[in-house]
Length: 251
Image (cartoon, rainbow, N blue to C red; front, side):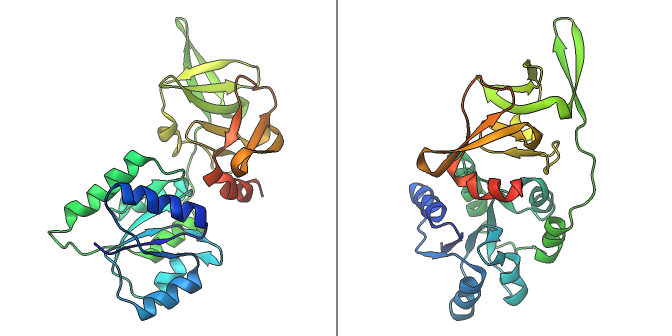
């Protein structure tokens, strides 16, 4: 199986390479930009599978496919969970949300291997996916949550929530009043329910509200520590793999 990685952050590319090696998938080629990738595809046999980041240092990776007719299967490694997820489901393409989970990686590779014997063609319209990313479809996002408080139901408006976090297999909403509420939703389910300009998933454990951030501090291992207006139950840390996208989101 011939596999390549296209990822502009070299530490992330090496981490992905190590994860694949643990699954006995060898990747000798790592590309880091649109320009480099186009040149490589013009002069080399195309691989069976591409692990592809959407946002590269010199543009969106879809520019590669606008220039080169590539039939390789694609597994996205992306932080663009809100818009890309819609497209991937439509086109039966797998995706891995950063920071990448080992189990998710194993499932994605297994899914690809299952289709190898049948040699099903790749049905991917990169222009349609690009449209979803650049001009996302208007949609309604969650405006409030209903939570159980004793024998009562309480409504919490989305603007009153500073962060969502997971703990002990539960998902909690923390409000600016300093209250924690247990939700029925998982963080993964929240991905399609939260307005992406307001909430950002900084790690596998936390979503934060941009309006609740009062300070950001450099932290160990190239990470960031977030200080929220009232939440201080535990440290809120931006995962190293998400720092770059987090900074773009802030702008």
